[in-house]
Image (tube, rainbow, N blue to C red; front, side, top):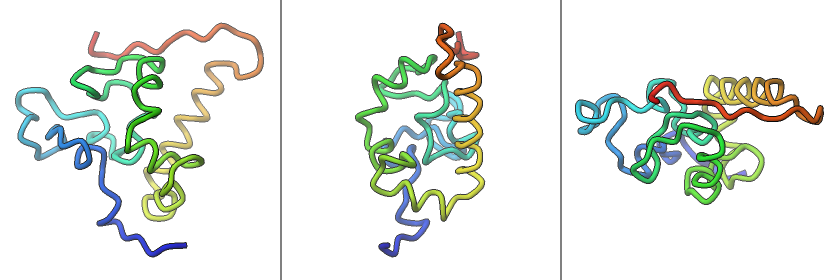
Length: 125
């Protein structure tokens, strides 16, 4: 396992330079991003309401189509990302939130039960 520090695992807002984190330059104009508010800078693909590609991602379907090729996702996804294992170790609170989101989503969707999935709507609509 390589030695990676918290400093080298940038948050999504640092990677994308969106300036929507708590002290960012665009907070007054666009508001603080939900990923920053929830301290989920390494798990932003798992939550709706983030601003990606200059568009608020209000559903899981929108997020999947844009996030699956994103640098944050490809680095920090817990099973497929190149540094997902490091997020688990260095950010246990964030990882626990991420795991709970995934568990809740699977429960809500009725994974494997054949129930129709209803997309989540973000509060911004």
